[in-house]
Image (cartoon, rainbow, N blue to C red):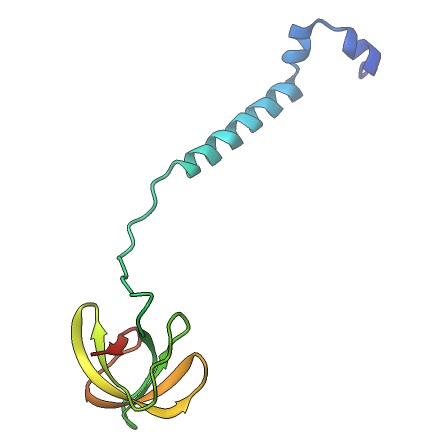
Length: 128
């Protein structure tokens, strides 16, 4: 038979503190806070540094069509260069090609004809 609330409240504090439900609850709370605290203190993983100038026109190659020799460049975080601009294509810090912006473009993407090299998705294009 379970004691009533009034009987439970009249017990000495050390008896209430060691009730099985209270002990399990405290252990659960301590375990949760310790694991979340440990997750917060873990160091961040090392990511490769990507350096992109904020004031220049830097596009990212998002599509390559080798057969028709054109690429689509994304300028979501940069200003779009004017039509007809010649751009150098870089992979990491190595120059891998050259392209010329064509007429087709919208506010964030542009098509460019491949003049030399073999650009790949993820390369960056910027003016010389």
